[in-house]
Length: 206
Image 1: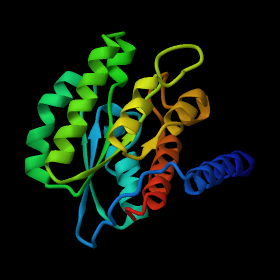
Image 2: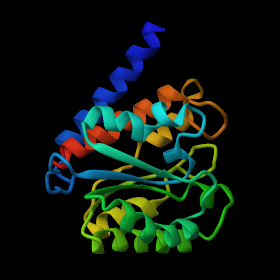
Image 3: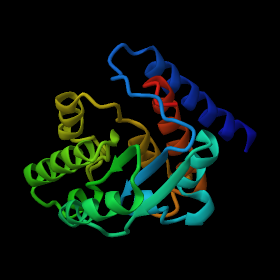
Image 4: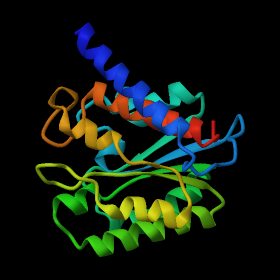
């Protein structure tokens, strides 16, 4: 067990170094003490496969960051439904930063990937129009290699926002980090939270 945990810690350190040393990480405004972070997405945000209230990535990120992190993940949600839900959540929560991790169900069901990109682009625009900052978390496509669709990096580049492009793909490829074929377990969600936290630090949000 110690050897396994050491391997995961090593991966986290490497990902942090790559993120922190990258000149390509867009810079965000630092969050103030009472600013709220909104985690918006589907079952990966909700924490399916773990004890959501304490083991989901938003729950762990709240501990790491010292900020209030609101979990607005809806299991099974498609991006179109997320797009329709987002304005109401923003109005109710008034976050200063949104972590957008969406599209997994679209990819699993092989829905139109062009429409997925459009939906995510609209979500980013709505978040920014509300006055909140946004970071994007990429989700891999359902395939043997679990490649991440180019649309995530394209959106991050187009809107000049930070992106965590690797950690969910890594978790999805490691059976020991999953509770089923799709969802992480508690260790998997912790790894996701740690990498998002490091991205927030690298972008100067924290």
